[in-house]
Image 1: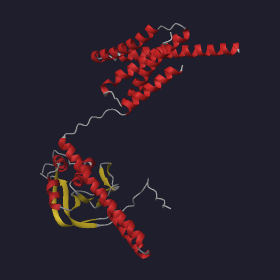
Image 2: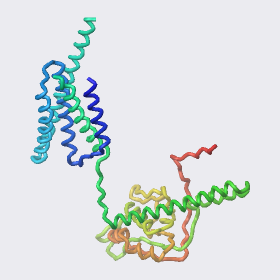
Image 3: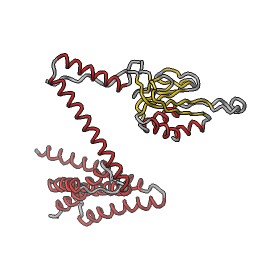
Image 4: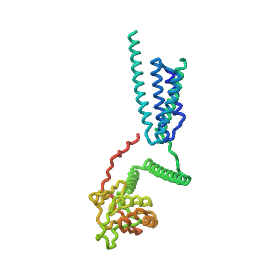
Length: 117
Length: 235
């Protein structure tokens, strides 16, 4: 449980310390990629709690989603359609769904453990 | 299955890095310095001059402070009074005189105005621009139609009339008096300035005459200070 949190903290620290900044014209892509990554992470947690976790799906999902989201945004820029909205919508809805499922699973786990006690 | 926490940790690490970079990017975006060599030199020169000015100011104030500290009571009051008069002079509360220029603005009378052309009208923006330009050409003090321009002077249009210091300015010609260290130079510069050209375009005749003695009236209204409080004395 603590290892992913530690990883997140180290990642944040590295990111802040490295002082890397993306040119403003690419910051859109990065924000969509962050959303995709968040979605994958929460999807992974949900799958883990439901016992249906598969590492290949998780890893490929992470990179594929990021690339797909950034690719959609890129295509949208060149076609003049705000395609990144599709990615934001899809990931946003999934994010909420996943978090809701995680919450329910945690609550049921917690109440089960209380009943046993 | 043992690798699961590591996998999560790796993904979380990448996500953390991305989040941090995105944060950095949105909070302090990259601002490119596009100044060329000459602009850099000019900026450096400006900063140097500013440094010199600040140094001079610092020296002046430390001298004043020394004076307050070392001298007796009467002299202290005298020094304070002197400082007060200096400040009043700076704020424009005293009448001043010196060399400068006298400008007059009146409608250009070519016999056509009133026939098929309406009487030209002064826009407050034109006056503001003129004041800005005078200040840019090193004008020390300015008055327009007997109204001293201080740092808080409003120039507005109310019902078609121009109001300066909340007083309507009288009919043409409008007289602008300006004090300057180098009045000849100011005269040359202002005659060819874009602000004056703007007046000419609007059918006004603008004249400027350099003079060795120009008298400017004092600002005669009360200056409202809204956001300043007396400083607490250091203990």
